[in-house]
Length: 129
Image: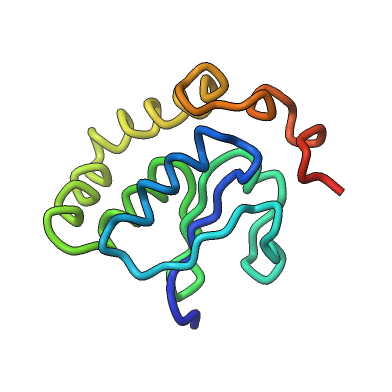
């Protein structure tokens, strides 16, 4: 069991990095790490999944991705954040949250804070070895 949950994000994406800067302001104890610097095998996560969506790995090792990761992050905080995370996990809103997350992820290179790296396929991004 991990000491604290882990938030994994795309460190090559300016939009993602700015979003994570907002997340670390939440009242949540977590470790935050770009997937490019994480030991993904130790976290039971593939590089393909980490490149595809933000990930939340809870203390028991369960992995949540995309909108579900955001919901779990919010549920781990203090009021009022768990309420919002719970709403995002409700069946009808979960579908909407998933679609909204995917739209944002697919268009992040056009959103404020984006960098040219956001437009590149994962295998061509700067942090690749």
